[in-house]
Image (cartoon, rainbow, N blue to C red; front, side, top):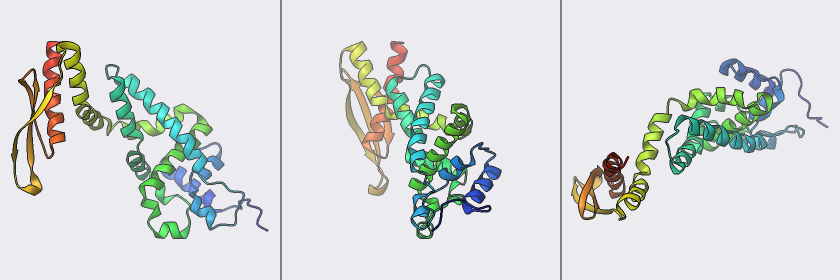
Amino acid sequence: MHDGKMSAGHPLQEAARRFEQASGLHFDDKTLLQRALTHRSYLNESREFLLADNERLEFLGDAVLDFLVGEYLYNRFPEMREGQLTNLRASLVRQETLAQFGARLDLGNYLLMGRGEADMGGRQRPAILCGAFEALAGALYLDQGFTAVKRLIMPLIDPILPSLARSVEKKDAKSRLQELCQATLHTTPQYRTAGTEGPDHARVFTMNVLIDGEVWGTGQGPSKRIASQEAAASAVCRLEALFP
C-alpha cells in the first residue's frame, strides 16, 4: 500500500521549487508551500492519502488578508469613514481581485490538480486562483509571519488602490450626502430625472439632486443609479466646502 511519503522529484516538490524560483519567495518549511499548491482534485485522483489539500490554508489566508488589508487601509486613509474603509477592503479581498493577484503570480501554472479539473480550465478559474492565493498567504504567514505576507501583497495592492478608492467614494456618495444633509441642513435630498438621451442600447441619463427644492448637483451615466451617484458626489463637494 502507498505510504503517502514523497520521493525525490515528486511533482509537489518540483512545483514548489519552480514556484519559489519564479516568484522570488522562499519558504523555510517547504511542505507549507507544497500544501498551498495542492488542489483537492489532485488528491481525488491520487493514492497519496497522507497528503493534504490547500483548503485549510485557504481558510487561514482569508483571515490573514482581511486583517492586513484592513490595517493597511486604516493607516493609508486616516480621514476615510468606516463604511468606506469596509467597502474598500471588500473590493480588495473579493474573489475577482484575489484571482487577479493569483494570475499575476501565475499560480495556476504551479498548482497540482486532477486531470479532469485541469482539462476543464481549472488553472484559469477565478475561484481556484483566489483560493490558491489565499492558501499561499496562509502558508507564508505560518512560515514567516505577517511581515512576509505584507511583502507579498503590497506590490499587488498599490497599483490598483487609487482607482478602487475613487470607485468606493462614488458608490458611497448618496449615503454621504444624506448624512451631511441631515447633520447640517436637517433635510433629506431628493433625486429627479433631468433628461434622457441616446438610443435604447446606449442611453445616457441626467439626474439632479435637490436639497430643499434647489439643485445642488447634476450627474450623467448609463443608468439612473450611476447618474444619481455622480450628482450626489457633486453635491457632497459643495456641502463639504460650506460645512468643512
